[in-house]
Length: 369
Image 1: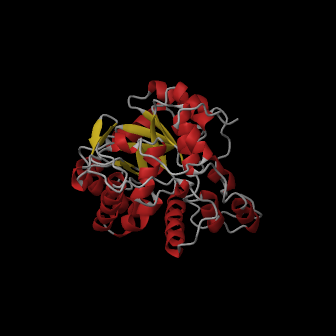
Image 2: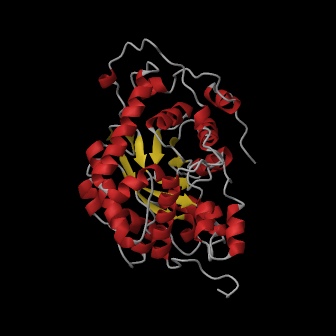
Image 3: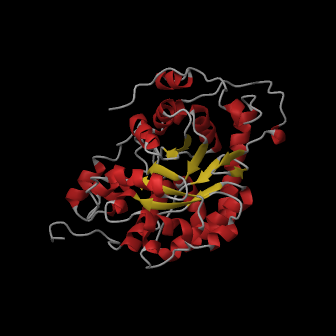
């Protein structure tokens, strides 16, 4: 790297991961309004003033990756430097096991390369014995030589039920020293989907997955899609915050609002892939947002940044956070007269946006591109 393009603080992988957590936490603490929203705020349920249900009896359970969940929630991928990640992972696994919700770990690159485990070992399965655990590698690593052997190592080290391949081309493009040669990545994902011993999930990290790409991925054998739409954490903005080079900072900030808003991504992917398991994530802040995501077609709601402050503090704080999310989701069901998630998916909406109306009415939605 030349002096004209100095590496930012935390230039080693572990330092960079910890920087990411600090910046996301600081952004959340500042409570600054997002310039780009998820679009979920436009989804308004018709209130049912006489639900004829017992709030406590509402059934939020579902099945995911062959296991029963007590609520349709996924603790989405979080990471950090190895020591910090170990604490966070243990807290998240403990709560996932206790509450009966799914857990996706952060990038396992450091652990796969043998530099540190970050708590990514079989201790997670001991803490979360009966819930789905998802391993995680980056699509960029597939372009740097990772294959089925490395992917299975990620799965086996935590006894995972599935593997996530995360897509972050924008983040890599605006990051100093990012991995920007993505030629052939789709073919490598297709190979993993064919050869891996567990289901393969593909997710974005906050810019959304289009309907057309989701369809191609499913046709290639991918078992589930996590849309991770725009409106939550902007990784371009995070990289801008990290950058010491003014040009890099300016370039990254130009893309701070880039992406497919979460609501549009969920509706579009569901229309294009009606039978595919889908995780709705990207800026979900409450149980009401989870309800909205499910109404649009998601099978689960995923949260990462909204959980991060609690995860960095204690297992008790994480448990309290998700208890609130579950109660909010339960109240959304109650006030729409929905006895279970199947009923919630049919709950009436007030003046839904056009893209939502088309998707939920079963009309054909033209894929992007």
